[in-house]
Amino acid sequence: MLRTLKILVMSRTVLLSSLLAGLALAPAANAALISGNTNSTGVGYLYFSLTSDSPFQIFSITTSWDPELWLGNDDGDLTVDDWFANNDDGLEFAGDAIINTVLTAGDYIAAIGPFNFTAEEATAGTVGESFSQSFQLDVTASNSEIIVRDGSMVNNVPTPATLALMGLGLAGLGWVRRRKV
Image 1 (tube, rainbow, N blue to C red):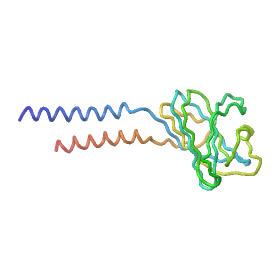
Image 2: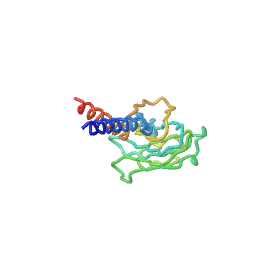
Image 3: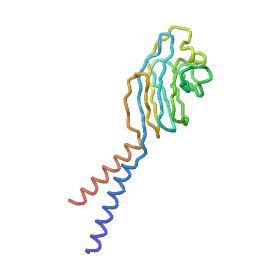
Image 4: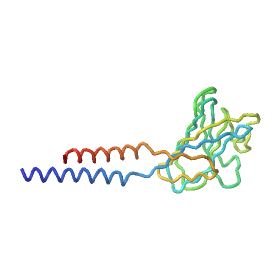
């Protein structure tokens, strides 16, 4: 009986320790929801930096227009050659754009504009017509801090893996506490 009790206490301690270690060792992740508006000629920009190499995702959220995204290096002198990724969902009247890639530490620029938005238009900052719209960009870098450099409103959001680990840790604590009573 005493041996069974000792094993039960040890297994609870091991479980609790593993859950807490899982919470403490969860991979750092950064996500931000950035709100903005395109300029009067239809182009919106986000200037940001990553502090380390990281898988990266940028996703546009719009309600009344179909955006296209461009992602490029921000070396201080924007040219067409700085753009290295773009995405549009392929539909002319609906949907949002998403870019998934791996970025190295450094400075970047994202441009958002309407459907069929070109690299030349992203560079020039105009789509050649009056087009002013609001947008949100959901930006995630799983292994890096995201530093937004343009004064946009940033709302940090927890990543699902962090929330899952925290929930698992709290459930473990509740289970251990319940078993003690």
